[in-house]
Image 1 (tube, helix red, strand yellow):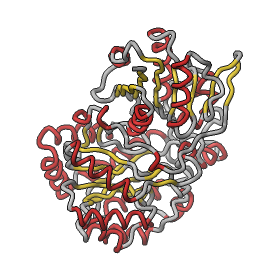
Image 2 (cartoon, one colour; image 1 turned 180 degrees about the horizontal axis):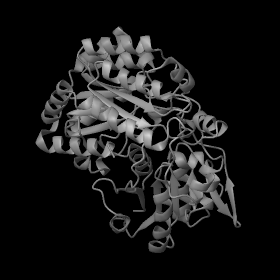
Image 3 (cartoon, rainbow, N blue to C red; image 1 turned 90 degrees about the vertical axis):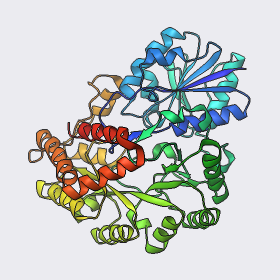
Image 4 (tube, helix red, strand yellow; image 1 turned 120 degrees about the vertical axis):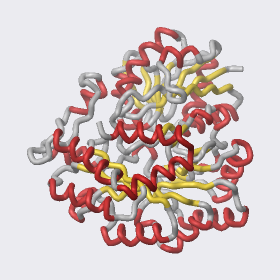
Length: 465
């Protein structure tokens, strides 16, 4: 049977948009694998993150009968992926190399111009990959597939007919059985666990976030499909916890309430956690989530000042933050708040207000990141306009003309040394409070034992660097 190899390569950068508390399954590859398997192909997922291993080891796991190799990448991971393409080309000279993921949608032409990949897939990859596989298996040209960037006659061309999946229920359930689920870890999540997506995209427009790779339309699974995936997670994979990786879980209230009601009726044996927005949560929704087994919420609070929240286009107020966090805490939720430091134009006093807010709120966990200008965002445009970012930075980055480090948006008042120090101090001031340290250590021990506590400490020390 014709094989297709889908790869996630080892992450080699310490730069991240948000604090990462573990290694999670690559759901995008699992969706692609399920789609091509349903069409009669044999997909193989090789995850270089689980366990962490170099490209040479990853390549050893690619079957000799493979007719196409697909690699997923973010822009942060691009420098390493770009170099890996050259090694893949040497090892598999006759096999088409296809790259997908958010980076390709942001930089379609540049991705091929500065790498050895043959084709890049823009947006949702399921339908484009099926067409590419059909052609590769028949020995036909891969040029001109809708929603791809490709080489033709020594020219790089972009076909902008992106094949967005409008009805997510049309997709088969992600092929979690092809992933080494026992290899994934999270310091606060029970083993074994699975991850899920109930939607694609986000209806909000925060200035620091780009959703171009998810399409302009917010799409979601039906309640029946979500419940079927939950049932499979418990029945087939023995899941004790489900991690919802939606950008904004619960944005479709009708679907959310239908799911919560049925979860209460079925009495699943797993607990679950989700990432969502402050302004989506009210007491009614919180109570329904809690009764259905949700125990933890991850909340993007970002700033402790109204001026910076407005500049971020967060669409939330500090009064909302205080009220929602207090309600969720009262109902027994574990709460994880995310905060950004060093936003363009932010003063030291405003940064201190953010750190102070994080310590004042009844949060169990806090993550702090120094702001970086992700591509194709309003933040990037703001940074260029204010002279904080070279207009050619991203072009040079994609081409490999930088060292791969994305700069902080430092200013005279908030230079790089200050921003690095204030992030480190924020972590120390939050977690070294005796009651916080004791409470979180006990929780981590109960979730995964002493080994998990060591992992949590290692990740925490990494954030202090």
